[in-house]
Image 1: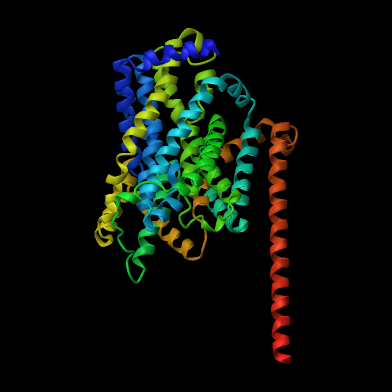
Image 2: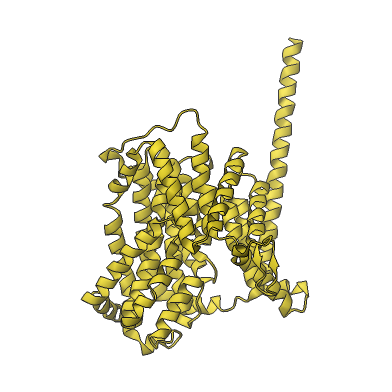
Length: 513
């Protein structure tokens, strides 16, 4: 323990040096802006600034890129809460209750809880990263294609089971998302499928146009269809801070989101996206009042925002401890280190202690910087809501189009966004949840690849999923969730039948009387 404290002291001497501290602040500011802009996201922001980091020393470069990464996690909540437009894909779940709180005049508390939850989750997960990196990374290495496939299937079933609504509806929407995710070039054979001659669909349907269409555009269509536009609620100073009850309601969701996000972040994949979905589903399931979710439950903001920030630190575990990136963003950062002649892996701590511990300490510093940046801006952001809706919504629509177009410079993405907006409008009118569609689009490439790699490993033998203990355990857990959901459906059916029977008896008694 004493050695760890000494190493942390070394890290803070590096992180608080003027040059490194300045790059941490710059990274946090750029990341926040990247998160606020719909469609840009942390991957695009890091990729664009990667060449600028080549002239720096390795520590400053990795600190700058990491600041952009977790700064984007903070910033993505702003437009999600105020306008129901996901700043980036990890903020999809924040749209649901965050925007409902805005409609209820509680935008300030939602933004404040998102900032504080992100800070707490980021700080706690950095401590976990510091203490648990090597053993957790070794466990993550035991996952091969069959384990990934089983894990993703379990994740889909668990989210459907914990959604609180109809599991059939949730699974139907997730399946629709998986079908959308299969459009484009087959990753194993190179076959061009389901694109109908549209060359721009070769890379598949992007998550950004799907998310912005299903959430941002569908909300504009729904509001435009109302007889009277929603009332513009001018914020008061007293309404900018959460109440005592809102603080109390947020404590456990922040704690659970932090743990879930960190553990999910270690496993390769789009961890920061998946973790927010899992956190929201868990909070809805454990809540004593699940009916409040979707109508402005503070837990629906605190949990997912904590989870996606905690997953950011979890994603650094295999990257730093083993040199294995757990997703596209850590892969770009790994490339940045290698350009500077640094080889991440088990020997990094011994060979480059200043870089490793300086990076850890800079994450503590970065979380404080982001909290200081974001809390004072709550009042500024909330004042956007003073703009009347007939003026605000056209501006939001332009914001959506520009954000989606900026990702790939493709008009096809804009048309996809429009189509998804129309689909989201219809589905919400029919009382379907649209969030599982986004999750299906995210998971489809990983699920398909891991499934086909598993069959390639076993020469087409499906029993490979039952011959590996971790995969078998996860599939068994998924089967149990399906059985539990079927039992609950049977109980509901029995309850409805008994209720109808009682109603008929009462009618007969009344008739006889």
